[in-house]
Length: 226
Image (cartoon, rainbow, N blue to C red; front, side):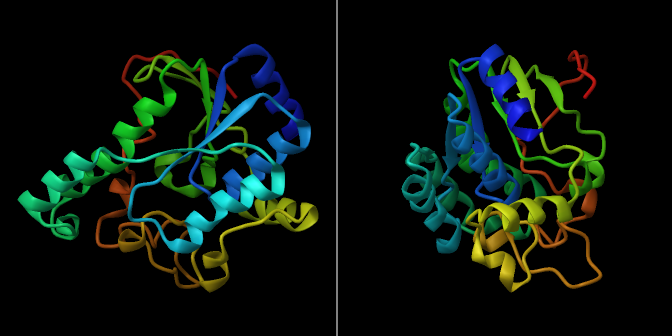
């Protein structure tokens, strides 16, 4: 089913790309794309603060699947200016500074990665958080002016891991250490058994603010049911 959905996207919205955070979900999508030989590009945003375990998956994908992975980095001058003005880890004490850090390290590189594309694909699931509870399979990204697909929107966490086990998909070993959602190293921690999936992301902030700015909905933008 997932391969058929991705095949349709590749056929109707070329050039399309998968925005991979190297999460379990994105590894499922990468595996499905590679197994089907689909003309869907894969890119990663290397923020400069990712865990080594996370970055190792870039080489693993290239070697395992024989497909290219485009890596986008933040503007070095912008990163340096932020650190000089506020301190490298200023995001711990201020929401606006945290969002500004995400803007520099994630959002701006994303714009470059999506330039000239007709559609992008993500591993978002409704189960991730209240903010993502209404994520559709297909939606229009008015911010970047292209279609956006979330093929795993209805999947459960158990379904993701069933696919990984059944198909021998490589994954980030941090999941074996109690992580359930993995971002930049200083902004991610393992979660406790009673905590929700994204509790380890920006854990010092309230739950309704735990987004980095990559997935935003522009008011008034057309939506598609999915």
